[in-house]
Each structure stands twice: as structure tokens, then as C-alpha cells.
Image (cartoon, rainbow, N blue to C red):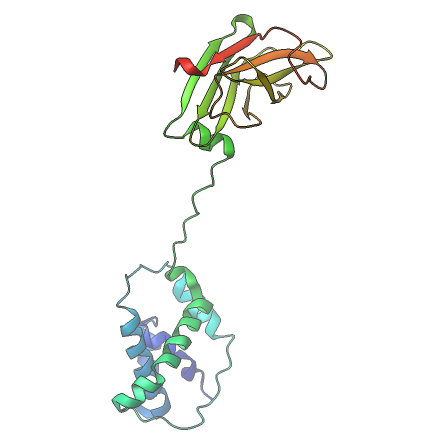
Length: 237
């Protein structure tokens, strides 16, 4: 079978250059099978074109022709006349749509879907920091740096962001606490030994009255053993 038989799909979607089009149209005048296949593919393409048009990338034609070269077409079992009855078209339409979709998927699905990178997913901390109900409380710790606590009641979470915070003394660790309205403290996790960090506090923070930081023995404590070096009043915002 001539390689020209392979170009019916590319011809139907106008993906041939002038030389290829001229050669194929001469072949088309002599090949009843190709005329029938082109007519059906063009009708199917016209129906699919009712969807929102998306400009194909410049590489589509190269991808289509490269894909065609890897396909070995089978001869039609029964010659199909160029003119078909409406009933025959309706009967074969689902098969033609399925074939066209397979062709599109194989030779460049990017035509039918966005090829830009998806928007990155927000981290848990970013979700709190960007929440519509975010409350911010900042403290200047002097030589120990700065820290800001952001709380979202809707997300029931709080985040602490430090800037140039002094490291904890040797064999000690900074521990975070959630304080309720009665002054009871619940551990909200240990802070990493880093000057600049963004950390989501452990536990529900929606009803917290304040967030505290204490200096504790390495490994942390069940309850504060020292006075807080910082206390972020969430009820003042």
C-alpha cells in the first residue's frame, strides 16, 4: 500500500504542506477508499470543532507526521462509497468520534488541554498565612530577633514565623504553647534550632487566647518550667 494512504487523517485536519497536499490530492482523485475516509474524518472533525477552539502548538504537525510513520494501516475490508446515507452516518458516527479522539490523544493531546504547569499546591502554613480571616500578632524580641504568629479560626490552626531569632541555649529547646482563656497551657510542639523558620503549631488553635514560647530542657516538657520569653495575645487582634 502506498504511503499516501497514511495521510488521510493529516489531510482531513489540514496538516499537510503544499507539496504533500498536491501529491495527496492527485492520489485522492484515483483512490475511492481514501476519499471515503477523508470525507468521514472531515465530517467528524467539523462536529468536534463545535467545542472551544484551542490553537495547537507549532510542534503538532511534526508530532502527527512522526506518529503516522510508526503506524501500519490496514486495508479496508469493504470499500465505502463517498456518499453515505444519513442513517449510515448516524450508525457509524460514535465509532468515528472514538477513532478521532484516539488519533488526537496519540498525536498530541496537548491540543485539547492546557499545557501550562498547574498551579502549585499551598503548604499547610501558606493556607493559614493566606486565610481570609488570618490574625497577625508580631513581637520584637530585641537582640533575640522578631516573631509573628498568624491564626486562622476557620482553619483552627496557627503559624509562627521567626526572623533572626536567637538560638536556644545549649541543651535547651524552645517550646511552643497554646494558652486558653483560663491560662492553661497545652504544648504545641518544639521549635527547630534555626533563626528563620515558618512552623505550623500542633493542635487546634481556633479558641486559643494566646501563643507562648518558653525555654525548656532538650526534648521539651509537659508543662512550662520557665516563664514565657514571648506571649502573643490573640484576643487583642
